[in-house]
Image (cartoon, rainbow, N blue to C red):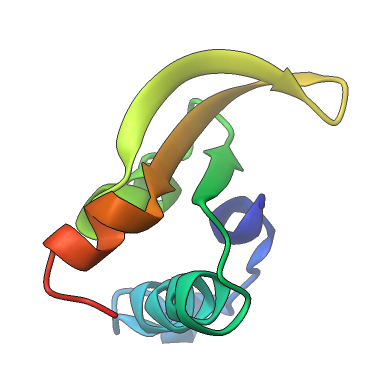
Length: 88
């Protein structure tokens, strides 16, 4: 799921935790409601703010991979890792 890189917030909404809050809700839904085993997120390598959102979720850097025809930084977390963070 390329969530963080696709969430376009107006500049006046940056640094308020909105992307992190939305990403936590999405991950919770993925693991708790949809019962997915793992979740992926991608961002442009230059987009450090998006990478930080994924890191705050407890996602691990899986390196540069090709998604949507582009080389993107890939992050992943599995359901066990998510629950190990005291979520779900």
